[in-house]
Image (cartoon, rainbow over all chains, first blue to last red; front, side, top):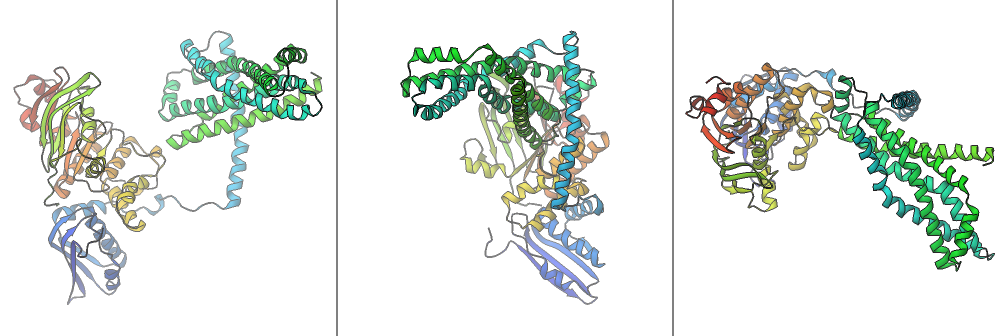
Length: 377
Length: 251
């Protein structure tokens, strides 16, 4: 970018009355590499007045303005008078405009980064404050359900069906893929051990009970957290950014009823169905592995599966699934509504929805497992 | 004053369309160096679409746009990019990048396309923000400032690289009368001091008469331009639509 000969020229003429006169000429534009001011700055101490002449300037833009502004600011700090009378008219006017508002030092944000301990404390405080917000949200959801069952909820049925379509049928392909894969992995790993005892037939029990009771629900829950929880957070977050949720509030329409309720209902309806479906796909995968790789007869596998599974396993699986569905919807909608007002905030909301959803799922799964064990189911 | 920069825009036989739906056809006009050129017309006539076609966001269905003789849409992508750097755009809502502060917004083009060090860029940014009256607000985020301030910040960013041509999409929309007037004065100052050529899409009559010296009138019904020239002459135009538009409904 630097040519051998710069486009700008300036000369410093010291004058007898302890003043400096700068004669500027040539082209002073941002795209021309502008000269440094350090040489001039060194000559400033002891000077009473700095004047400029710009008759020879052929072209200028804010590059010149910036260079001059720096000098003028320095002069003001050192109490040196400045004379811009011989600069082009436009330069003088814009310089005046630029210096019209004095710099307010306190308006600038402090750029200090808080210390590690302060950060840690802030995180702890944020977590402490998060709990009441979540309880609040939970309460709002219950109230919304109350209105729903009384037939007084303000929402659009078409929205509900659209969301159901997106959450359920549109997810079937990915749920099939993942549950099939997990079923295969389970079958394969279990079979390798069972084969040592000639007990391959029990792959059916392993995969059957495993997928139908818990793992189908877990995989579906995590999948829903990533696929649907993030989507809910992004949708509601963007609505928050666009002030659409504010628009609901000003019209007295409950955004809980209109936005959160259909999403919650959709997941509560679809999650158990998807879980059931995942369980069946897992069993199927197990069958393919057992029959294809480990020489178990197809019919035998089928009978063993029926023997191992009774209706209670399916019900438990669907209970897990429903609870996980609720938690995913909860996390997704909560983070969406809590979203800040920038593009970055929407991204953070979506990420947080997934992480929170998965966290809730893990906690719920652990508690439920212990509970069911105590109940002897 | 940049002496020999022919920042003319030449539009020939341009047709704007979305698929088969024609918005405007047979547009022919020139924007001359130092013009403040107004694109006006009723709502929905395609003013903003025309702007998008002029700044390289959308390809015209037919016709050419030439910047100082260089046909934009016939040029190679690299040449198109360097042509784009010669103009700055103020979008209708400012279109500030929401994750960056105002200072960072203005600094981004400077950081990308100049070799200046951080201190100089910070000074340039401070200067630009002061010129639009936002000198104290460099560290604020777009979500923390008002709509009018967002527009002014958008203007500071559009001016960041001192482009030859500035495009303003409805700059006065949402501004109070005083701010609108200050913006007009700033636009005039930019033309007079820096020699910028400015294209303004607007239908604010006060601004049109205050700053415009050349204009084109787009008609939504016939879907073509029906008048061009200085708004102060067009107010007495033979064409009724143009006359009533510029007289705010009075015949």
